[in-house]
Length: 232
Image (tube, rainbow, N blue to C red; front, side):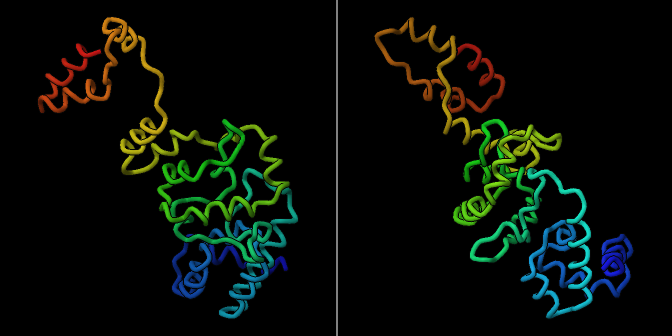
């Protein structure tokens, strides 16, 4: 078993020997090097064995060796290709999610509120398509209770990033995301707004109109900024 597991170093090192291309082509179907982190199911091993027995033996041996060692915290449990996280006896592998660097349970978990992110928030953080709604909730539902309960009692890992930090990592549409969040989660009026409202107590001020008025009145940024200072 150990000799088979040792075969990993020839598959996962940085050399670019042509003989590796054949194995890499098979691995890419299941997440490439992600497989060496997973608690792989026998189903996947059998599928790989149909294409290459050597590769299947290496993965099987590597999985046995690594998972007999000290286990990781539940927050760092691999989500994809994990035989402990299944639906209808099948493991999960969402290629487009993996390409967005989603690998661990804690990436879906909000330690601030001790619960998994809502689907809307997951879309904002990782750019997941809105039609992946069922995918997300099926995956969350399939995470075993013992993993969920252990996460609830864990402190925030050092690698855990905040909701805002995850959004800022995105390369595009960051401003649009924050704007949408602000619209969906309106705050109370500021002290300045309340002060102006007291001056016009008989009339309900339309703050949306007031705040957008400078942008409709001029394209000059200096005038817009001046108007913004005067308006509130």
